[in-house]
Image (tube, rainbow, N blue to C red; front, side):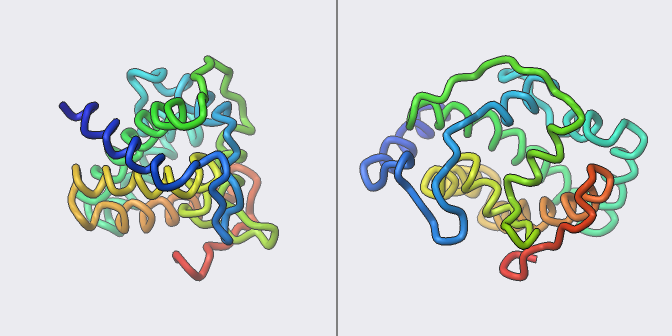
Length: 192
């Protein structure tokens, strides 16, 4: 049932816009290259069992990842942080499926290396080192597909889930950036 609803949402999006040509003034066109998503997913359970907490463990090491989880929980509340990770799992899994439907992107098992977290963060940065999780999702999926994914997320997790996701992601990335060699990163004023 859930898959049918998602397919209907994504099919209706394609009736209005073609993500292959979808551009947003902030983001530009989608990359249409899911190699980065695949690297993160493969190292964190694969496309069927992807787990964002495991991805954070891979990026920071288990001890630092737990410290970051605790920091975010103290800052935003345990419930919002738990939901953030559930939303991120859903975005990766369903985003890859939707990218396949929209422009034929295929899951390819690829390796994780030390540059993977840095490259994933860079996907959300502009040429002045401002990061935005909105920009990151636009670049990974295309603006229209990103918007449709967030509508699905808000339908499933509640109307505030999208806003909370971006708020927690922006903070997580700001905290992680110096640890992955991006100490010059700033949070975009539009989302931070």
